[in-house]
Length: 441
Image 1 (cartoon, rainbow, N blue to C red):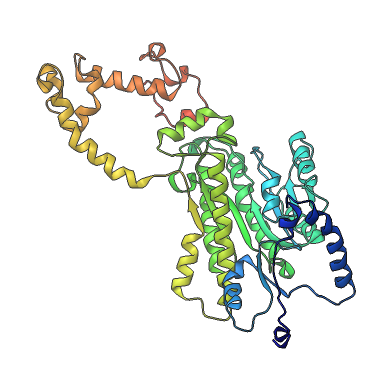
Image 2: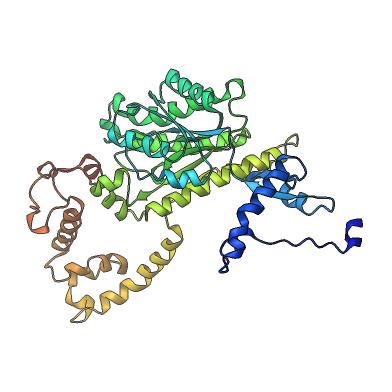
């Protein structure tokens, strides 16, 4: 502090203020000042302030260091890791992907594993766009099937050639709809292999020679069908159920993993290309998720995985208590598309409002339809649309016909009550959601 005895002043100001100053005098002297500063730096007479960098996962340590009394220089928190890269196992269903967004998050190195490699024009455009983001972006595509052990191992080895493995996205899937009693062994394994065998292959390949030491996240693209089920997709439901359990198991081993149980993605992906399947899920009460919402959920899952890794590193050497293990297992699964908190309210409304609706019918309610009298208020409320029918059988027939026409996307006037279900051509998944039988009733 002796230098202050000479009445020395050390002002701090922003050079950009001089550059944009209205008077041309200050902008004109900036090049000369920059040149003098650069010469002093190169000659070693001045040095940059000390810079201490912490990863985002260790932000608590950065705050503690910042508050220490003997700290000198700046403290920076970064999400970038120059050596890390992300391995992505692709899905055969395209989705919108903006490389600019992922680039800004600090990801620079990608390895894609897919059965077609870069043969498809969309895949080529994606790689070209990502490579155009800058000279420090590395993108490699590996041709292969993640359910094949050799292909999965080759993809992981390719990742090692470009850097340390920082994250894995397991988005492989396969679909083959059929009722379980009619499903062939080949159809069963079409949906099972990509998720079940593929995830195990990645897990085992990463465990060799400590390849997963710096793994920040292991993202598993699951589905809400693993929890609620779908009539014609028992194989797909089982595969997603495995992913949910697999994520919890990896967490119990102290390894990162999170399964995202996606529901309806309304703007991109498989359901966007198959609106009739989307309609079935809507009728089940599954709520749609748009592209922005989908990206936010994925970001939440990856952030939670990174937080788990940081917590595991901070508690290294300590016993894995039951509380920590249970917490990690619960957060390993994120489910989207359901609103169970509304079900009790809807049920209560139906129970309390059924009788009132029936009594509010023209002509005295129950008295106007004698066949409604022996029915409960809830059942009678569901038959309100057919209250003018001559009998209970006719009212039920109208109700079933109306719902059936909505199910098979056929106008009600074109539904013949005397024709069998085979007469109506339907998608396999739609057909499985209707009760098979000789007729509509």
